[in-house]
Length: 138
Image 1 (spheres, one colour):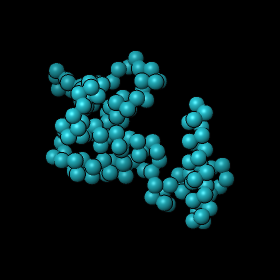
Image 2 (tube, rainbow, N blue to C red):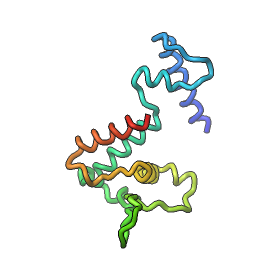
Image 3 (cartoon, one colour):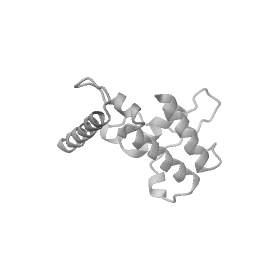
Image 4 (cartoon, rainbow, N blue to C red):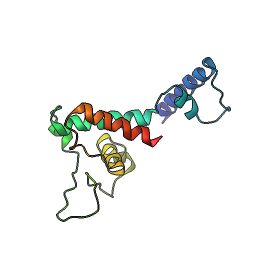
């Protein structure tokens, strides 16, 4: 826990320095999201999710060959036509530790935003699609 806190404070110090250096007005002890948006930066969480989606696309399309990691993804295959469009089946009895593992985080985020990994003809199109999705989240 102390290690996470240390990274968090280093990030805050860095963003505080940037707001001072570039004269970005910010109320003390407030959110750093204005600094991030002015400097066109994304949060570490969003960056991690973006790279996770890129990795998953490459894994599912065969660009990356890693069957041991592919084993962690649970695809939702419906036996009848329903309104549920989830790509992945999520286990409801998941612990907090397992919820934050990369494969579960990618599956949950993909289901929330209805990201389809199998529509894009290549990685460039998928990357463009992801950028549109992330820009619409803001």
